[in-house]
Amino acid sequence: MQNKLVIDIHSFSYKKGGIPKDNTENGGGFVFDCRGILNPGRIEEYKTQTGNDIGVQEFLENKTEMPNFLKSIHSLISISITNYLERGFENLQINFGCTGGQHRSVYSAIKTAEFIRQNFPDAEVKIHHDEQLHLNLSSASSN
Image: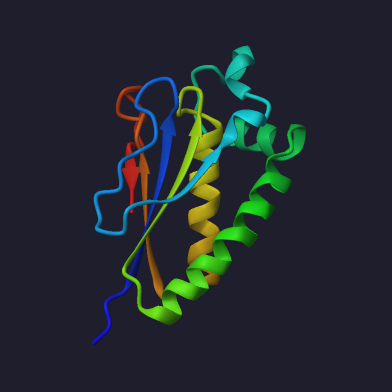
């Protein structure tokens, strides 16, 4: 029996931990830099929130280029996911980085996991918010 494709999605901070290491034998995956998107962390009401919070999500969806950014990413990763599923690959890592690993990268990881779960039900998705533990927030990692 063929093993399932496991897709690990990380949000991370370029300033703190840098690009997450791929602990599989696959040797890497995708790395997307979210710093080109307007940072909600520079707006007072969002400073203590994260990409998990509805206010930050609405800001990113309505006041930035995030929807177009993610649409392009989802199109790109779909090529590899389809190919990996067809070829029986077992691992793929997708990383989203921003300055602090708190807003843009967290949001991107969440929305990408939703996209993959909806469009590729044969894949198993795991989300890792690498900086959430350091922020002492409730959603450190969700599977």
